[in-house]
Image (cartoon, rainbow over all chains, first blue to last red; front, side):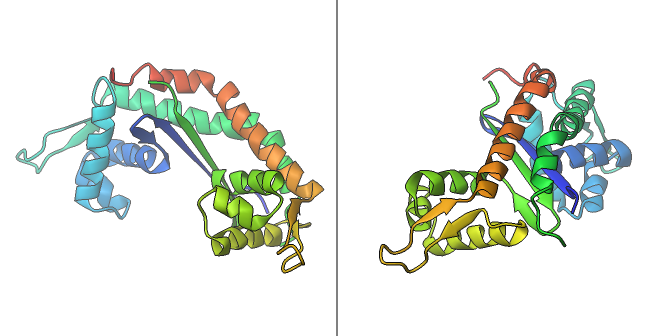
Length: 114
Length: 114
């Protein structure tokens, strides 16, 4: 049985950054709106907004800029800080898999046969 | 704001290995019983047993051996496999912090002042 999922959460005081927020940032970048991103993730609009607000409050610059209530119902996009945080998080995940490959293999070698 | 906590969960199919199970293994090693380990962690005896059973079922050899219902109410200890899995998990956490230091610093540099 291979490693099927890695879940990495970083806590900086009150702010938590994990797979859900990273995926939401990616969905906002691809969908161009918070509501569409939330739908894509099966998340309520309210929940998606709460996560965005928590991230925006936790960083010096907002990660997501939105035109809430605009004519189009509000588009949204990642700021440069948003792209940077997302890239660092995804890079960290890749780093874990690469640098941690030996430890993960040690565990895998002891797993029960499936 | 420094990184205050790292939470790393590994999923191998049905089996999840994370901070709670690692801490439980450590507590069993130090306390010498599953019930005492559960108490130390503020966890019910039933919950502690469930976690141990999930781990024991997921690996080729059990991670915890116990004398359930013995004269002393059942002592427990880690097997060599239990020690090995715990060591690999703790090493992986340290590896993440070390190899991921640059990515974590990139994120930290963007955090709001506290």
